[in-house]
Length: 303
Ligand code: GUN
Image 1 (cartoon, rainbow, N blue to C red):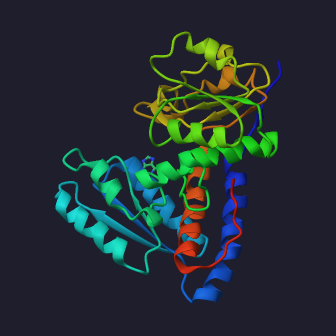
Image 2: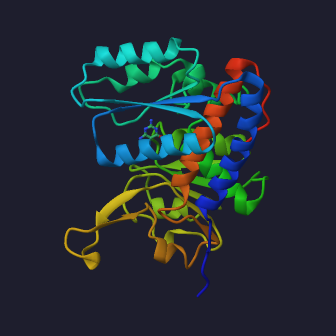
């Protein structure tokens, strides 16, 4: 039984952050201040709190300033709007990230549209979505998880993905749709499959590259994978793990790793695959935003 080669997201993310840290030293020498990332968390959802803490820690590790605003779960929408307006007009702040999901009494679309596009390091603002669609990569800020997925695919397939068939499972604004745009920009043939797709296994079996981003634990089985394909698993699902003891849980992806690893050529693990790349690409976006805002040329081309 052949086993796929595991793509180590931690190693590749460390390569990206190492380059950013080196260039940050030059940036500080030139401008006198480090790039600054502001992260806003509303409420205390445990998973969101961990993500936000990791983002802040990585920012400091690469030499950025990191500001965290933690607001109570019942924060009125107007208070969050006032905070975003303040961060938008603060010249010290280069990047703004509002952790999602937001509580239901806050209109997330309204908040995303309020963030200044040049500080929108998530790449969720309609202006950045449009720039991505138009291929205007010099001005766009690109969603971090999809960008990380492209880098992971290139880390094993090389820089030229031209002509490869990429099947993306999931059509979210955060992952599926921007991932489709990015793989298209790499000259891939792109198919988006989703919950209404007929014979989804047959569609996935056409893929040279599979990007699974549906949020359904271990949905993609080994029999769905073309032998030798590259599998990028974006899912992070917490499921019960009674084998570890009562009430224990473990993280799994959207891909059934055990069966997929017997068929795929390359596969990302969960955790330790796409997750670390998302944070690394957030640093790349923050650095790009800071350079653009201050007229500093920068060389980081993560994709
Ligand atoms: N929640 C889950 N993923 C993300 C992300 O990439 N950015 C933000 N802001 N919130 C998230």
